[in-house]
Structures are given as C-alpha cells and as structure tokens.
Amino acid sequence: MLMKQDFIFSSLGKQRPLHLWIPEGEGPFPVMYFFDGHNLFLNEDATYGKSWGLKEYLQGWNKEMIIVGIECGHEGNERLSEYLPYECSHGWLRGTAALGEKTMQGIVYELKPYIDARFPTMPFRECTGIAGSSMGGIMAAYALVHYNQIFSKAACLSPALGGTVQKLWKEMNENPVSADTRIYLSWGTLEGKVSDHPEREDRSSWMYKSCKATATKVEKAGGAARCYCQIGGHHCEADWEKQIPIFMPFLWQS
Image 1 (cartoon, rainbow, N blue to C red):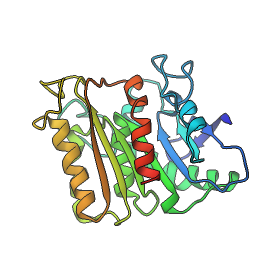
Image 2 (cartoon, helix red, strand yellow; image 1 turned 135 degrees about the vertical axis):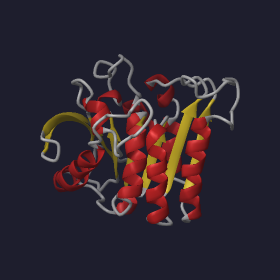
Image 3 (tube, helix red, strand yellow; image 1 turned 60 degrees about the vertical axis):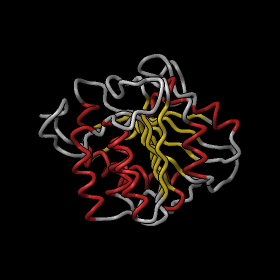
C-alpha cells in the first residue's frame, strides 16, 4: 500500500512529505529509508516526470519491506544544503551550507522512532537500510558511516562525492564500520564528464576511484561492497530504476 503524509523535522525546522510503502500483512518488516522520496513511486510526483518505478519492483519481489521515502526541500538550494553532510572548501558545492547532519538527526532521532512506533517494523540495525542518488547518494554513504549503529546497509547511486569524499574517508579511517555492513556504489559512463569512454568501464575516472576507494574501506573493515558501472548510464531516474534489481538483492538477500 502506498501512502503519503507530512512529517515535521524539528532538527531542520521544516515539514517534509513522506512517501511510504507499507506491505500488506502483519509483519514485522525490515525498513529502508530513501532520500528524494518523491522520485520513487509515481511519475506524477517525480521532479522530471519519471520515477524509479519502485512500486512495481516491490510488488514482484519476494521480500516484503517498508519503504520510507523522504522528500527534499524544493526552494532555492534547500536540497543541496540538506543533503550536504560536510562543508566543502572547493568544487561546485563550495559555499553551500552543510545541513546534512541536521537532516540525519531528524531521520535518526525523530523519523525512525515515529516509523517504528506506528508500523510493524524490525527496528534493529541489521534490518535497517538507507539509499539515495546523486546528493542523496552522498547522504546514504554518510549515514552508513556516521550512523553505522543504526544502518547496516546503503545504496549510493551516482553519489556526488566530489569535495566531500576526503572527509568521508577520514571518518571511515577513524571509525571503521561494523563487519556486517553492506554498501552498493554505482555510476554511469554517460554522467557528465565521468568517463571519456562511455562504451566501457573507465578505471581512470574520478567516479570509479571515489567509489572503489570507499568500497575498499568497507571491505577492509570486514563488510561487503559492490561497485557497479552502468555502461551507457545517465544521471537520471530512468537509469537508476534499472539498478533496483541489482542493489536490492545485494543488500538484502546475499
């Protein structure tokens, strides 16, 4: 069952819509949180008129779970700020207010307790994942590292790591993730200037290097990681939809 409702995040002082998928039955169910929740289920809700088609995938998948899609702010640079966990001193995010930690505080300390109280969830870390694309991909990686006691799984599709990746790696060096952690990182060969070779994986690209190094740190801590290069993949919902049958089984069934 697909549901929509508003939720007030006092950490940000903002109200944000939630896009919820609640399975039929008594549960309890594992839970996966998604950034940019408006892009998940319905084309009419999606920013560019094309959703991930997650509803159709879940209807045909053999694992039932609750999905909590969190819509971003749409005014000015709200999304960039709310999905930026570290201050950037260079690159295209330089000067953007980093409100990502406040966003995560709202998810961890306000939204998750609400979801666990209202719905038949499995509230344990082992049954809680998080996902996002682009800036949401940065946030999913940050959530997995900074709140590894809450999230055991993360899907980071086309994460715009950019000027944040060094700070993410520093945090991973100082606080290694638990050994049962799983992370999925991906990129497309037609995403901007990710690659000069869109017909094949380019291991010299900055996206490959950022994702691979992040995955390696998880693996060195004893966790599992998968890097996926989408040949011909663009930075868009239509191509992220194609990855759902890849990252969902990897995170939840392997």
